[in-house]
Image (cartoon, rainbow, N blue to C red; front, side, top):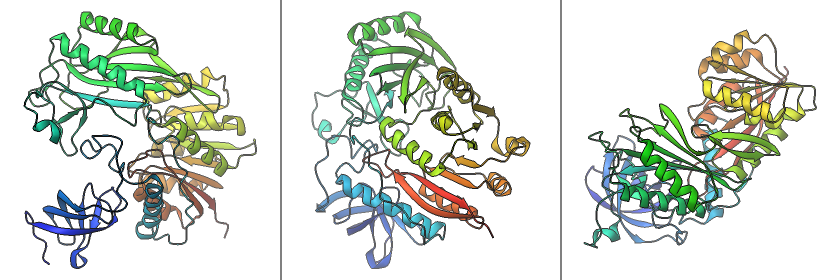
Length: 464
């Protein structure tokens, strides 16, 4: 069989590839098909063809896999947020572990590294403490809605169709967000529809309503509502704030972020407090954290505690160590470790995150955490101190090669590497492997029903 672009084929899905797509291999040629599971027999159309692989669009499932179950959410095959909902959770964990193992073996050439079973998330629904919904003048219709002529293609507040920037599915109930969040979203949608002001249009760059961001505190069961608009309108936002605060006693914060740039990002250029305070509070291991509208905070609070507990275990602190945390963000890991170390220094390039980290340390009465602002490759050489333990928690792209070289030059006794991307984890560990023994890797599931997986690696310096 010769695979050609724009041609249709019947294929048998035999595996799941990293990225969550099903894999077929007609006559050994890899074809990746989204929204499929191993065991599916499918009818597809090839949309991309390269020399050694192809991508195809699913047209129809001819015979469903025995692994395929019922999804709780009606949108899971369309919005891209939870593509694995139809896959049993134990199977999800098995595939995630295997993806970590295969990345280490094939990308990092690290075939002997011990990878533990994935620590599961509990719960696996309603777990997200932050959801961001886009506003659209014309919502994308679900297949069953296309058949109903009474349904208008009007305002939509929801999630983007994968691969598009201007097609938004109107989400009435998101099952990975706590149920109260769906009630708040419905109330916002009702108000926006009645306001007479149009949603922002990503092509014409006209309109008022841009995003609705919801944050939830698990420890305190309180909510933040962040309404992102293109311009100021104090009257309409005050009315919305009064409407929401009267309807939901759980809402502790309502803010309005203003952004008039054409980019599709929700971080505002100006923030206006509408109701309550400008932040909500969360707790991790007894420590309290202030979370503002644009702060970074792990989106699965309970699983975050699993992750940080493993970081603490691998750090193996006795109380007299100097700990250095690269990419320290808002200070969650340094503050978590502060009671077990003599001193923890965090380095972070984002100025607002450093400010939040210092406030969080002050909020918890912690005096042995220091936070430095700047690019790691510039700050590290001027540090002047050799840490006993280094925590590395980089973004998805992993470490810059200059940072890797500096880490190897400092060569602390122990490194704990936290990763949200098995591919860059494998790449970076391969560069560290000449100096460090990679003792084991612990995957932690932070995002049920997706292919994403966090991992914590324990590294110990070799003594030659």
